[in-house]
Image 1 (tube, rainbow, N blue to C red):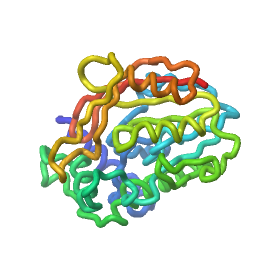
Image 2: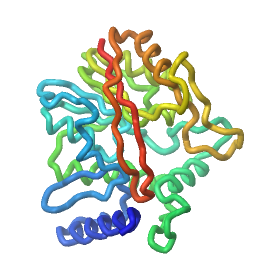
Image 3: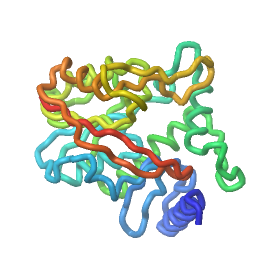
Length: 286
């Protein structure tokens, strides 16, 4: 069975199980993460980190830690940090209008690109139907609805904070003493101003920041940032910059982290396309 067909089977099993449990709207959500909700209910996520979570090097015991999960989406990492004992603040955009866009682009461009990333043109369009949601519906079915669905099923106490990464402050998060642990995974590539994003998080972090993301191909020295947005004003993958490893490490040190080390990589498959990915994992310590 092909990877797209495996994904479709998992999605159908999830919907059938959810309906048997009397859970409404389960078939309308886009699941960014695979989350095991118990009772045989497992969300059919684009990313399944259950078997590769150890590759991130997170502490097994996070009891007493206050954690900031940036760009939380469905919330897999937020719920995992909570399971390990932490108090967790999950950060997500207030709306899709707050998603970074290249100057001159509009919200409709962003919505089209987001749905295109979820369901690439290479997939069987008869099996994977794009919903054609408007802005508010896509925000609910892509980000907020799935998170609330999982939080309720898990009886979680994870707190949600609505903000862009640039606007995060201790007042906005409600944690005035700052955060012992910050996780910044697969978000920076979607920022127009990566240094500004890192600076906002550095100001909130009192202990450890873990970064996970794509590295550009080619040399990792000297420090450099590759532009990947292309020249077409209407066409990009909501991504513009790839800092190389040296650039990331030096920026983090300049922002006040005493030590920055590469923990390793995490790898996996992107569903339903079957695309294989690899991300670097960095740990920065104040």
